[in-house]
Amino acid sequence: MRFFDANCMVGELTRPQPSGHVDTVEGLLAELEYFGIAEGLVCHARAAERALDQGNETIVEVLDGHDNLHPAWVIPMHTAVDYPEPERTVAELVEAGVRAVRAWRPPYHGYLADTWALGPLWDALAEQRIPVLVGASDLGRYPDQPGHGFSARNLYDICRSFPTLPVVVVRLNFSAVRVAVPLMRECPNLYAELSFFTTHRGVEFLSREVGAERLLFGSGLPWASPGPAITAVQYALISDEERALIAGENLRELLAGQWHVARSPA
Image 1 (tube, helix red, strand yellow):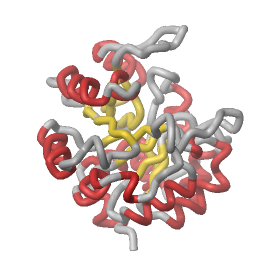
Image 2 (cartoon, one colour):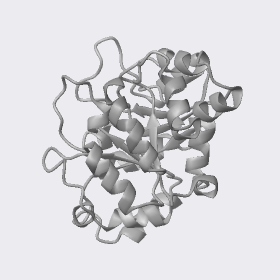
Image 3 (cartoon, one colour):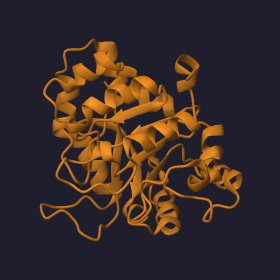
Image 4 (cartoon, helix red, strand yellow):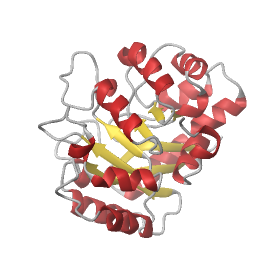
């Protein structure tokens, strides 16, 4: 299998992990090589911590020349004010070699996901079928953590409003299964990234309930070790074809804009 990490990051965090933090491209490459991960979809810590323009420019620069590392830009949840020319923004990111973006909820109005609030950039991304990885959603947090944005209802509305837009829930949490499964059944363009999904036999369960083609491997670096997520995929009681899809083929297909050929939403 050629593992493709859908959830990793480089750059110095404001609050780095006490056990050590992978903040350089060289450090990330060493970690991926150690765990046998062939490729990574990478955003920059500056962008994740809301210095969007600087972080997005930096990630393209630092990954230049590393063909197995693919840059992901970060966008705010609401884009009407920040991106008045969305078509130009999408053209720029495609020209820069960016094939996916990550959306973080703002510190306020994080549950406001009407199309007028999301802004025209989401339409432009949907037109080009650029995958949007949604971080810090209610489906990706532990039960004792406070909710700040991107509810299950928000994700449903987004997927229905933009049926050609691949939407990925990052860090799907075990506690969200009873909502995530029917939500994914209703929304064919909704995917789940599994770096923090710790349900026993969870990969088998989701493969059976929503299909292995809707699941993406991720490490969670630098917040987590890739080991548990790799183990969950390696030892899942699923077919080799399903294992290969989850390990990396699904993400490669999404980044190539080909997901809709076989699974276009109604």
